[in-house]
Image (cartoon, rainbow, N blue to C red):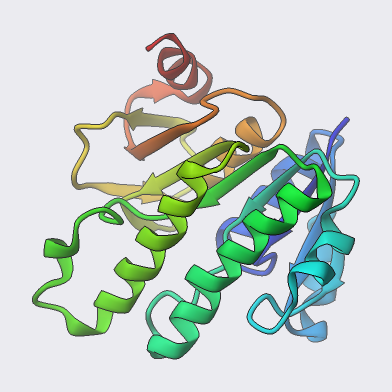
Length: 220
């Protein structure tokens, strides 16, 4: 069984991923900012670790992720707390996590991005979302240049539909919606394998079972 660290452990996707991993017998260290969230982490089978990704040092992150088999970064200010918070979490938090993985010798790192991370034109008419796009693009770019066994997951517009565990994955996907529960199922599958290593996965809800979809990616 694997031990997985999740940065941004109290988010909806993170809680669903923790529950999925724990149900499979894996151990999860969930990094959270607020100690009041600890019971929610335990309720889905995770071990809460209180550490604010925005203010944490790389050295502190190294201490937390050392000995894990994979790290999932799904923290995000979501562009809703202003540019400063967005860059502190979505960009700088991700960069610290990448550095921590390298220093701790954790080869596998999964990063939850979004469908238009490489497309600044997609937010040109929405100034409030520009820092979010810039932060995600910066984090993705650094990770893609690393030697880690990374996978970047880029869902479409998120929804709270139950997990169908059926998706569409492809470079040509430019729009669509993605269930948070399907993202969680993908993360659980990827965190406990090296499937889709060093791949960027554009993913929306679809008609292909997740194991088959990931197998198709691996064969490309």
